[in-house]
Length: 623
Image (cartoon, rainbow, N blue to C red):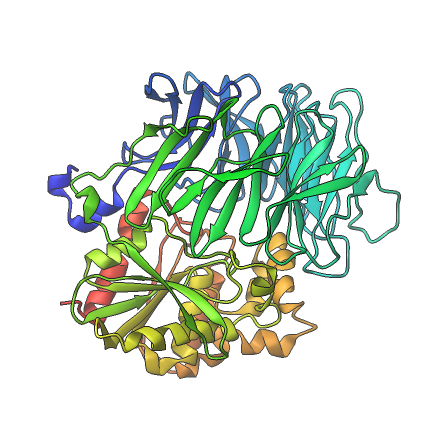
């Protein structure tokens, strides 16, 4: 279908978008997902010539959720394959001639954490035995060996340069907020099978892993990259409240910290000679790129205020000694893929943003502002002004909850603005980018004061002459879908309608049926275990308060969602019916079929846009 045959809704959803760009080992090529054909496919781009070639033909997932990685010699690309977005990934390899083959097939969710530099091994995170732990797959023998056995999930995992050690993050303490960095010797994958680290049986045993004990107990230290000499680790830690970057010397067990804790900073990777590293710096909903010399000097890259991101760590952002790969976007400019020269600050556009029939300057910028919430806490927010007077408002809480809305291009926000709605996004307490103390305000209070922050933001903007205070809806996905439920049920006087997309409704059911690492690292982190805090689980479950619904509600959910299972939508639908609400009048219910936890697929985006647009137009017109 050409742009002239498409509706504006379809044309917007169909704008080609790239995902997960990653540099080849020698930096001469970029592999990335791209949907310019109308379907997600894998492309390879030559950095010097700009030529790009599609090497997949319908074999990679339609939804580009999971990243890709090159093998060590740059001859093939590893990718994650699931079934209809269920995230129970296996690892496949795609060759340059377009042929594909399975590499690792395990039960549960498997994530490719790293590829050894000699090409012999893959480092995996997998839930195949329950909790998310580390495994090594030997490409020579085809054997997969379990490396860790912890009760808490293992985060990340990075091979040392020689492939005989791994660094990773997990928690063995009694503090659920704690994360520590470990280093373990695993030897050669063919001749030296490693012992298993940790023990989820509860029995004491000697561990071959060493806890580096970075930061204080109850805070979070994470490992990002190895130095090229194998003697240093690049880490991030939030002991000082705002996260900071550090280099841990394994020879001396000393760590050097960088930055002055004025902003949140998270390390990305070392540059090739190990004398510099790159990091993300977050401030006021913007994410900037920073280069640190190991002597402490730092400089921000010369890019407009917005959102700068790098490929996954472990060197995949590196094109050459002083040249890196990054993507950059703003609230009103779509992402571009850039090669950035750190010596000259010259930028080469490797992949331009596509605008189709839309004018590049025709999208809406967002206003960033802060306001005082109900208890005086300062909260940040973004407001997209549609230009309609007065405009109906869509309140769009982000997911996570440990995420945030940034000054980056947001397709849903731009779609809603194009339909005549202004859009409000709130970085409520618990959002990332404001430090550990801000995040931990949500601990033990999931569904409490962060919902009051969202309501306070609505109260703040509804008096603005630009906003129609009688036409306000709430729409969100994932934790944003949970917030949509809670806003409608806790603050019914504010809203004329609401949409919960892949939202949490029943915390007991979520705990029982979500993936194991979501139980321990998400729900227990914020709420404890259900048998320890049954009253909190009940009170903060939207399903407990269905009788408060007074505005039309649309429930949308994919049936293959494993993060927030379809049972969440079905149980809430049944609770509404049991409470006497009539389907089609008081609420509408749509199962999205074989779709997981959201989707980047163009057809699935068009379907969701159409459902959302139809519901909002019928429930209160933007005209």
